[in-house]
Image (cartoon, rainbow, N blue to C red; front, side, top):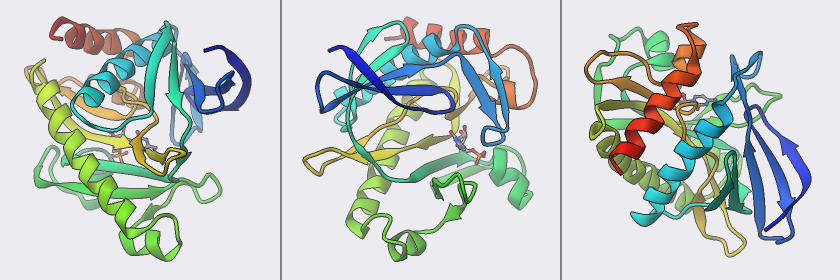
Length: 237
Ligand code: C5P
């Protein structure tokens, strides 16, 4: 597979076409953003780390039966993926209270949720990605009820698999964001990326953040923190 024209550049990834119309080339960039892109910084080595973490987790989820867009990782910072029509939704799952849930509802940090909480955000730059509920998703025709049910089921399954995987390396999976898309044959797949940019990860022993909160809260360098997550994942494969 060879890379062709750039299709779009996002906040942390660049997507290009390839010589195969069904495949896209995704480059993970050395960039971090916060506040929905209003704060942006270059971070050397971040793209490579996120690519490796993401590729490792996609491969493991795929092996566990989760349908994904992941095909291969041809080099240090790139991923070949199946072209998908993306659902314009950010699917957030919360196992514990943190982040915006904590500030919105004033509940104690890390209160556990059983069952986990599912939230949806409508991806729209013009609207600043507003919260949206199931009825609103269906009323706006963003997707249909069957697809939404599959999204929910796959998200729960991913949560079970990743919660166990991270627990095995001393990390609590607090919450995370997923995105889904449909392939040419109509099947739903897990897409986007699986990295500490999109997961809240907390060290079980020290309580330290091992994710983008380090950047969001100005707690120090992101690079060594992401490197530590990758190191633990690789050491326990
Ligand atoms: O900010 P909030 O508490 O709603 O984030 C919940 C989870 O979703 C966090 O793990 C965060 O990294 C992720 N998220 C994301 N992209 C967004 C918003 C949230 O990856 N645009």
